[in-house]
Length: 258
Image (cartoon, rainbow, N blue to C red; front, side, top):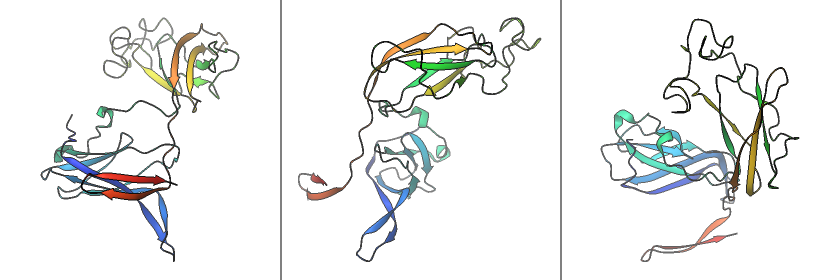
């Protein structure tokens, strides 16, 4: 990993005005922020990440500000990070290597193994207990069935996925393979494909979840259960902040929330 966070300080983000009224008040431009920082890395370029996603890179070693797009949601705060990188890696996305904070959006993500044994055309439904401790399998949590194979996808091949399921003669040439799915989930290169389902925001609590697979003939599998999963919705972002005082000697800042 080539991201460097040491030596970068005084990172600030300000919303840009879309216009100024006669009384001096401004109208903020939605979803746009000006990010500024100080850096001791005079021979490197800098990258900006918004909520762990690559937002852009500087074009020279002297640049210390950048305009970035930010999410339009006012339900949670936006996390902005600045890193120094070598010039040759300025446009490499290192988002997957940044340490992510605990998920607190109130959503639950369930990863499912797209096994070669699952039939084409099969769907999955997710159920939960609504905090009662007993999963209700009469009403799925997802709005519509989850398509396990959303489009035509080549499977493992004759004798590798079961007779009549794969393509005769290919012998797993189209399997996901090492490094593309779950390491060690099954035979090397096979049954390594996964897909994910993310719930709508849930109230705070601990929930159990169950998944059932339904084939095109209407046959339903036994439930695979997981949990309890603790859900903590994100705190709303602070609004109406004003500075009451700042002591430069003690570096003490006093804010007021309206």
